[in-house]
Amino acid sequence: MSWIKRRWTAAEADRWTKEDYVTFVVSPLVYVLLLLGTALSLLLRWYGFLLLGIGLALFFFMLWVIDPKLKAISEDYEIKQKQYLEDLEKIARWEK
Amino acid sequence: MVHFAFLDWFWVISFILLMTVCGILFYKLGKRSMADFFLAGRGLPWWLPATSVYATHTATDTPIWVSGVVYQHGLRGLWYTFFSAWCAISAFASTRIFRRSLAYTQAEWQTLRFSGLGAELLRGWIAGWQVFMNMFILGWVGMAMGKLCNYLFGWPQWVALVLFSTICAVYVLAAGYWGVVMSDFQQGVIAFLVIVIVSFWGISVAGGPHGIVTKLDAMGQSWRLNPFAFSGLTSGDFPLVWFLTMLVIAVIGGFGMGTSIDWYPEAQRIQSAKTVRDASYSIWSGTALIVIRNSLWAVAILGFFVLYPNIRETAQYEMAWYRIGFEYLPVGMVGLLFAAVVAIHLSTISAHLNLGASYATRDLYHHYFKPKATEKELVWVGRVSTFILLIGSFIYGSMMQEITQWLIFALWIMAAGIWLPSILQVVWWRFNSWGYLSSWIANLGLSWLVVWVLPEFRILPDLPDYLQFWIMMVLGTLIYLPITFLTKPEDMDRLVKYYVMSRPLGWWKPVRLEAERRGLVAVEAGAAKGGS
Image (cartoon, rainbow over all chains, first blue to last red):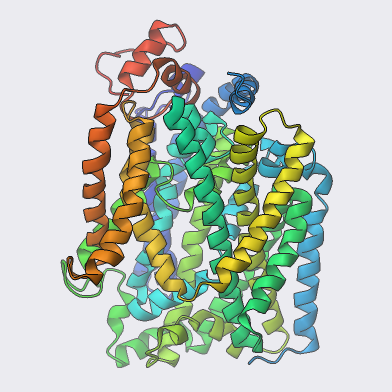
C-alpha cells in the first residue's frame, strides 16, 4: 500500500495528512464494531463474531497507518519540550 | 439487604487496605513538585493513563445508568453509552494538539491559544467552573454509592458518601496524581475482572446466550436484540434523528476540546503521558475498554430482563446489574463484587478530587493569587484544595436525588451550546476568546431557558433532548458568531507561537503563512492550496 506513507521526517509528520484522515474515519468505526461485535458475540450470533473480527482487523490496520507518524512526531517533539515547559512556567508566573 | 460471610468481609477489607496503601506508597513522588502532584511528572507510559481513563469512567453510578437504558431499550440502549466515542477522533486530533501545548489544565490552555483579557477571563471562568463541576460530580457519584449501600446494608445514604470518599482522600492528599494513577491501575484491573465474572454469571443464570435469545423471542421482545431498532424517523422513544444527533455529537466532538464533560479528566491524563504517542494511545485504548465493558454489561442486563421482565419503576430496574451480582453470586464472591464496587468508586472519587484541586491550585492560586509560590507551597495548596473539594462534595451529595435526570442534563444540555465553539477554538484561527466566552455565557442562560423555564411557562413545548440540542446550538451561534466578527482577532504573535508549538488542525492558513514568513516552520509544498 504505497499510498500510506511509512517513513516520516519530523517536519513532514507535523502536517495533517491523509494518514490522519484515514485514522479519523477508521477509529470511530472500530469503536462501533467493538461495541456491537462484543455484545452480539456474547449472545453467540454469527454476525457478532464477524463484526468483532472486522473491528480487530481495522484496529490493526489503523495502528499500521498512524503509528509511524506518531513515533516521528513524538521523537521530534520531546527534544523541544524542555524549552516549551520553561515558557509555560513564565506565562503562569506572569513573566512573559 | 445482603448477608456478608467472613470471606466477603475479608475481600472488602483486604482490597481497601491494598488500594489505600498502594496510593500512599507514592507519597515521596507526589510531594516533589506541582507537576508530580497533578501530572505524575509527565512521564507515564500509555497503559497507566489508559487504565486510569477506564477506571475513572467506571463509577458506582455507571452500571446504574447503563442498566437503566439497556433494560428500557435493549441493545439499542448501548448507543446512550456511545458518547464516549468522542475519544475515537480526539485521540489522534485534539489529544495530539493538547499534549503539545503542555498546558496543565484546559483552563491554562485558554491562555496559550488566546491572549489578553479575554483569555484570562476564560481561564478564570473555566477553572472556577471545573472546581464546582468536580465537587458536583463527587457529590453525585458519592450519593450513588450511598444508594447502593442503603440497598445492600440498609445504611443511611450519607454514611457511604462520607466513609468511602474520606478513605480515598487519604491517598489523594498524600500522593496526589501519583496515588490516583497507581491506585487506578489496580482498581481498573480488579474492576474489569469482576465485571467479566458477574456479567458471565448473569448470562449463565438467565439460561446462557441461547436461553436469553429464546426467551426474548417467546416474550415477543426479540427487537431488544437489534441495536438499530428505531421507533421511527422522529417519533417514539428511540427515533433515528436522536441516533444521528448522538453520532454527530460523539464522533465530530473529538475534533474539539471540552465538547464532552469527560474531556477535563482526560486532559489531565493526556498531559501525564510521557510522549504525544503515549497520550494518543492512552485515550484511545482506555475508551476502547469502556466500550467493551458497556457491551458486557448490556448482555448481562438483557439476561436480567428475561428473569424480571415486568419492572416498571426506574429506580428498581436501574439496579439490574448490581442485583445480578448481589443476588446470584455465591457466598464469598459477593464480597469480591463489593470490593470491585469500592474499587471503581475510589478510582472515580480520587480522579475528581485531584482534578478539581489542580484547577484550584494551578489556575486560581498559582496564576492569580501567588505567581511566585514555591513548588513546596503549591503541593500544600493542592492538598488543602483536595480537602475543600471533599467537604464540598458532602454538601452537594446531600442535595442530589435523581441520578439519571442529572446525568442526561449534563451529557446533553450543559454541553449543547458550547459544543461547536469548543471545536471552533481548536480548528479555526479567527475564533477568538470573546466568541468562546460569550458562547459559555449564552449557553448558561439558554440551557435553563430551553430545558426548564420556557416549557414551564408553556412558551415552548416539552421538546425531545435532541431537538433541544440543535435549538441551543443554533441560538448560541447567533450570539457568539457576531461577537467573534465584531471583536478583533487574537494577537498574531500569540497565534504564531501557539501554531508552532501545537500544530493545530483545520483553518489556520494566515497563521501558518506568518509562521513560515518568520522562518519558524518549514514552508509547506503546495502551500497555496491548503486550508491548514
